[in-house]
Length: 313
Image (tube, rainbow, N blue to C red):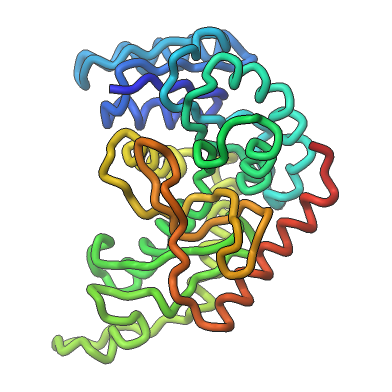
């Protein structure tokens, strides 16, 4: 079992800690936060439930307590406000990350680093460029949550088990993300053909692709407007990524990481299918896209580069 350090004990960090504990993905979890009392309280609350779960030791600590961590999850940053884009947060959270990087990398130089804080693509890029940690050990949750939202939306539309829906969201975790519909299928049948292929005694509903993508992009904002934060979806998403990192059975996930020539794109972090496991990133998967989808991915990369060029790392 692994040792995992979570930096940031707010709604997202504490929910991730709870999800990791429920799934018993670590033998030890360290919660670090500038608000030390908050970290202590969250750890204590979760720890008191472990007799009903399993032997997970979760506690608060400082950066030196991260020593020996196999995985470090970073959630620290200013939360997104209603109506605010993830990229609006960029310089503020870049500055917060500047203070974190030297402290955590000194304590845990051999860990795998999972960036969750937003804007996740920008902060992952910053970490790769400035931390001195190997790039294949650094990645963000990227469009994993967007992909889950996509699968959930299609499953809701057709009232079919989510495990039968396959597809991805590529690009930025934000406004320039997109679904490569050429790769999307339900039970191996292209999504476009699924309704027409159904021979049951009722008609399946139609759906609009633009509406689905709009739903994916706006879900976070809707949830934040309703309850002031998003935590459960990203909590489960991060736990799923950590589960993949715990084992040698490599998984293909849409995490954000440094792109190095795939689709003619370089020097930016964004999400495409990536093979990841216990040793970190094994490689990217340049799935066959249509010409239009490649242009959409390049547009997403350009949007991120425009922001990167305005930031001080």
